[in-house]
Image (cartoon, rainbow, N blue to C red):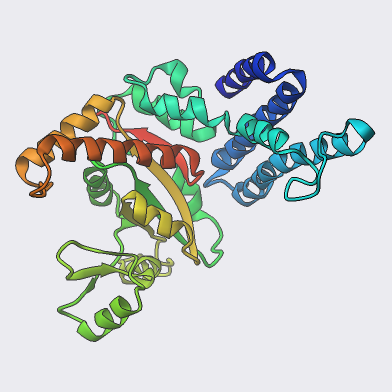
Length: 345
C-alpha cells in the first residue's frame, strides 16, 4: 500500500517536471515495483510450508515486471513512426535514456517506504505495513510483546518436510549492536533442534586449516585467527548432530537446523552457498538511538578499538553509517523472510 502511494506521488511529481509521457512510464515502473513486492510476499508467506517450492517458483515472476515495462516502451516507440524519440542506434536503440531512467526510477520507488520504515525513530503499526508478507507480520508480532523470545514456529514445517537433500540453515543477521548473538545463544540453549556450525580449529587440524586459508575457502575467521568457518562446517553439522542425538529405538534421528549468527558480510556469502536451504531472519532495533547507545557502550568497554588517528566520535559516526547500510541490505536483498525487532535491549 505504501509503495503504491509513493509511486502515485512520484508520478504526480514526474508529470509536473517532465510531462505526461515520462510520468506514464514512471507510473508503469512504479506499478512493476508494487507487483514485485506482491510476489515477494508470496515467497515469504509460504516459507516452511508444503507450498514453499511452489511459492518460490511463482515469486520468481517478480523479476519479469521491469523487463515488461521496457518492452512496452520499446513497442510504443516502434509504432510511433516519425514520432519515435530514439533517433540514433546504440545502447538505447529501442528506448531513450530518459525513458529508461523514468522506468527504472519508478520501479525502484518501492524501496523508499521500505527504507524509511527501518529508519523511523519509532516503528509504528502503520510503518510495519510497508514490509511485505510474513516479514511485516514478524515485525508486528515483535511489537506486541516486549519480552517474547525468537519465534521459530515457522520453521517446524521446514524441519518436518520431505528430505530434499538440502541442509536447512537459519540465517540470523542484522547490524552491529542488535543483540543477535544473545538471541542465537538463547535459541540454541532452549531448543535442541538447533545447532551452531562447526568451526575448524587451527590448533587441532593445522594442515586442513592452512589449506583452506591459502585457498581463501573460509567463509569467516574469528579475530584471533584460530577458528575458521567453512562450507563443510555449515552443511555437515546438522547431519552429524542428528546422527549423534539419542533417539528412541526404531525412530529416525531428529532433523537439525544449523543456526548461523552472521554479520552482513557473512550473510552475503551464505546466500550463494550451494546445498543449503536458507531461512533468513533479520534482527533489528525499533529506534536508531538504541543502535547508537549500544555502540557507545561497546566503545566505552573497549570492545571496539579506537585507532590512533581517530576519535570515539568519528568511530561512532562510522559505525552508525555502517548500520544504515546494513539496514538497507536487510530490507531490499530479499534474503530475509522474517524480521524481528529486539526490544530486550
